[in-house]
Length: 268
Length: 305
Image 1: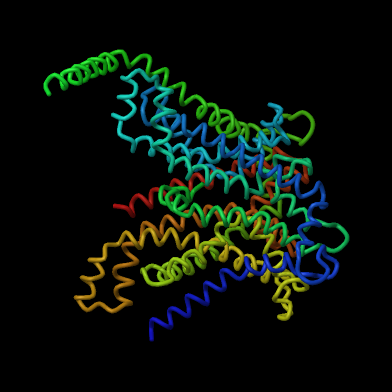
Image 2: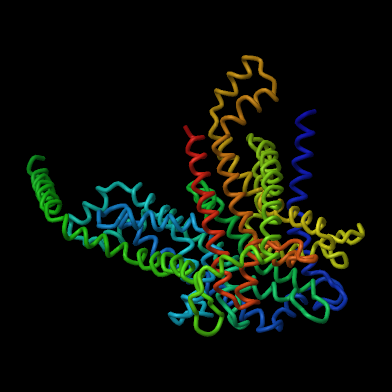
């Protein structure tokens, strides 16, 4: 009796949690007077988005570029850095590690204004490269911590014997160690993707040209019409374009997500 | 056999010797090699974290327009903070929001975690269902609710409620949005803590005749304390920095009743073109959060012991 009660309560809650996503998907396809899909069901709202503002392809390309650069940059910097922290002693090592972890202590919203000024000084204002570098910085504490621990978990004998056999540190790193820390790399890459794909405030502040907006800012701008009605069908289509890649990635890479979660990604 | 083994043994000896030589020659060259691998990290942290950290302090001491030359004017940017009624209101509003959401989020997350903590058929599905909103970006979630709670377009139109039409309803709807988006996330944090409690402890309690409620209050909650503390830290610091939900979903309205602190920083910088004033607010918020983080970490460490 108690068991069925708890089962139906849990099921009802699950329906409640899944409902908004299902509704959003359904209403992005449903016909609505005045929207891109006037009757029946179809992809009218999605095709109308192709002509919204700079066009869906332009926003999608921006988002993909930023995410690709963030993932690549985070992997590169944190893999090299993680290797340095796991295998070498060098001056300033502890200081650099502490400075990197300090990024977690500083609320991200409070250094976006100086970053806006700073990127302007080095010619990276309103640039997707500048935005990606900022995302790499925000990902770095988690990524470096994760990669250092991954490298430390690999037995030293493995790369040291390779070096004795004539490998340099770099070849030992690329040929022996990187394949051994693949799960760590996948976790770091997954979190870097989710953060850069979904972030709203950083592109809102650091980019000031509609043509370089990524999806979250572009879809938000659909709600900022000074006159004329908001096209809610197209809005939900935009939400789906943003959400579906994340949902798929989460379902496929759930194992890596939970792994990162356990090792402190929650603060990132 | 001995013959075959000897070259291998010889090679092993070579290897040992080489390793010893390698180890002896290591210190100096390896120091520099290590610095080389750490160099990209140092550049990113130096240029994109430490430099802006110093810059935000310097900016807060200057009249810094969006365009044009900055001019030193300390401590004017700090002195005028209390003259900004919108910021003062935003401090109270953000604190109120943080208190409400932290209490509700913890309660809901704990409830969900207790429902799905035991292995039984379908539990993986339930966990995924509760967590799935957390996989969607917060901006996307806010935009989703913006459509869903629109009386003309959304499925709740029949209820004839203005979901973001009054200050209280706007706060209520935002809380629903945040609970939906983050409850599963916090549930996952609590689950990791719940699963670290040994089964034997529960068995011992059962043999001693403890009721379910006693087991929960006397065993589960105390052993879960460090995990609950971590969840509270994340919820409090996250809520004090609230932006997306109020900027996108309620747009600060109605009548500026849902303007958060970070929204005022954004407005001062990009609508009033006063980067110096925005930097001063940033420094205040930064100092408050660093102090809070340090305090909470200490409490958390204490709880671990």
